[in-house]
Image 1: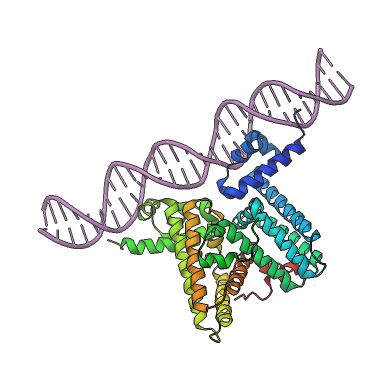
Image 2: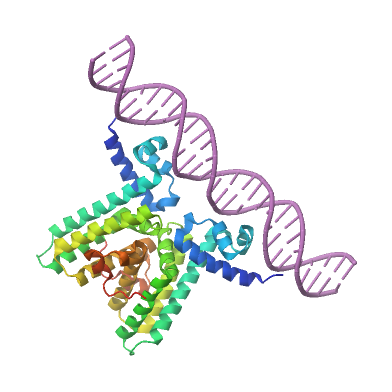
Length: 180
Length: 180
DNA sequence: TAAGTGTGTGAGTGCACACTTACAAACAAA
DNA sequence: TTTGTTTGTAAGTGTGCACTCACACACTTA
């Protein structure tokens, strides 16, 4: 036995997050994530229930990591006020722009939410993230809403590569967004 | 001659916007948009240079319509101040939630922006929309940025169907967003 | 009427890819 | 050593789909 199935599942999941983030659900063959994980395609199908199951698992892992990143951010907040914690979380989230994977996978998942299982995973993920942000920061609805609005703006900035665009309209959209 | 190629191109484009909005680039066969347009698949390929060209054309049409919708909104603004015009545009954009097509196609296009031609179309589209918003409203960078941030939040609300979710976190995210 | 031009399609072709199956090797327990 | 279980794969299978091509019909012009 080379390794346990559980360990394999974890490495496959990592590969899946990256692969699906880059090329999306329909454009990433499971051979690609199998190759990235260093195992055969057939074994991926044994470890996960089809491509859809793999994608849903990757999405769940994605939201899990986002909550972890926000928690890390909140811990190094300057103060204990809601807005201070929210700002610290925002900085932590903006740093994920370096990763790209977690940002992009959310966009990919939203795009394929005509598949009911994926839509449910997206809702569950945002439920998890949003309730965490509410509870951890103690902020009001309007503040939380603003937090997520600017988070979504990050998705546009990353997917369209607006950081690289020197024109005024792009500067306006990216102003104040931390880049690492 | 049943019709001119130009007229056909327009109806195909309408069908393409709807079809791609729902199922995205990779998951919509051009047979689907051909069927929706009431013509053969082969003729679609004669009217457009491949599936990619069709998608890019659809995306461009999408942004064109968005600018038109914002213009309509701006015209019925209460006052002439930047924020008043911006708010009126925001209401107009929120009404597009009823359409879904224009909202969703943006999400789909962003998701496939690993294809260079599509990324460029997205940038061109947002350049068009953002400069229009800037010029037409006369608002400052921060206001414009906020406008787009909440616009992107609309995309999340629509794709995840958050309007239908009665839980507090979803209410927080959707608060104040006009539904028609 | 003959030739030319624009509109339209049926019937392929080839390939990518989701998923299966038959099989093998490593390890454990008896 | 034998039997069983888990990890792993090579080699298919079937299907969906992007794109092509040969061909036909409508309409115009000389």
